Every structure is written in C-alpha cells, then in structure tokens.
Length: 233
Image 1 (spheres, rainbow, N blue to C red):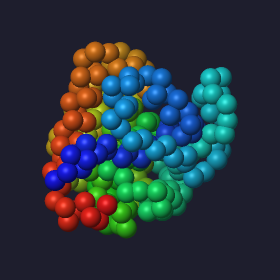
Image 2: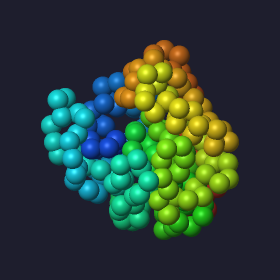
Image 3: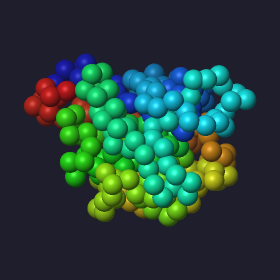
Image 4: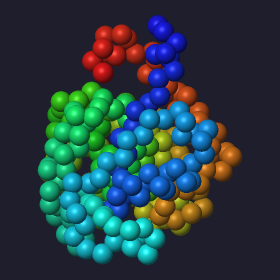
C-alpha cells in the first residue's frame, strides 16, 4: 500500500443548516476550527435544493441567498420535498464524489444522521458508496420526539447505527435534548459537549484533541480498506 494512499484526506460532503447556505457553513467552520483540523480534511459545501421559503435567523449576520433541504409543517408533523432532497444529494454525490463521510449542522445534521440507516435499507443513496462516518453538529433524529416522520426516513434508526460518528452538543442549544437522544442510536459515538448554543462551536484544546483523534481513526480506517473497495471510489 502506498504512502499516498495512507495519507489520503477524508472527503466530506457538508450540509448546512435551515435557511442558510454552503458558503455560510464554510465561513463558520473555517473561522471556528483550527488549521490543525482543517488541513487534514477535504470539505465540500453544498447548497440545499430549495430557496428559503421564509425569514432566515441569520439575516443580521450573513447575506442571502439562503436555502432549505426540505420543508416541514408547523409542529414538524408533515414534510414536503424530502424525497426530492434525497435525490438531489445523491445526484451531487454521483457527479462530484465519491465522498467518505457527511458533516451536517442543524437541518443538515438531521438529514445526515438519517442517511446511513436509509442507505442500509435501500431508501437513499443507493447509487453511491456507503457513508463511512458522520460529523453531526446540533442535530437530532428526524423520526422522534416532537418531529414527524418523512416516509423515507421511517426506520432509519430502527437498528443501532454502526457508522462512526462525532457529535457536538451545546449546553444552551435548543436542540440539546434531541442531540442526546440521537447519540443513543449510534454504536460508536464520540461526543463533544460545549457551553455554546445552536452554533458551530470553537474547538478548545480538549475538543480539538478529540476531533483530531476521531479523524486519525477515520484516516486509518480508509487506509485499511481493501484495494477492491478503493477501486470503486
């Protein structure tokens, strides 16, 4: 196995929050996370498929355009355009991949968290390689608690999710409870708890070490893949 293969950076598709954009998520990640982490990752930031259908909470801080991955009724009991969103993400992965893992924030984290289970059940991402790991920031389970169930996502967490995952949970995040419940669905979760709210947290020294260790493990996992698997990539 060549040293070049061993040193390959994980390719990560990054999914932004509700009524924001890939550019905004890029700005947040690159300003909050140190170069010691970022230099070893290949990040691709995708815009959601649908223009924002209402006011964005970040209008005071970031200029439009803003996007959504899918829409939900008040109370999160009915969803629209969820299957269209799945097709959109898969089409991008076909054209611009392959990707090793997903990073999601807020609505993007809800979507990312459900994708390995949906992929396992043949309900999403059937034409692309298996999602190998997740980074979930301020996320939760789409089916669960006060949230409704898009048909394609029903059963996404019916079995323990064996995809390695890194979870960020904010002490003052309104989705803190949802994030804690989400962690319980994963077999190998690594959890970073921070004192901030619903945001991309800055990485303090201990959190930075945890992130570096997680990605060191991911890089080893990728380098240990059989050549037959790598050839599909």
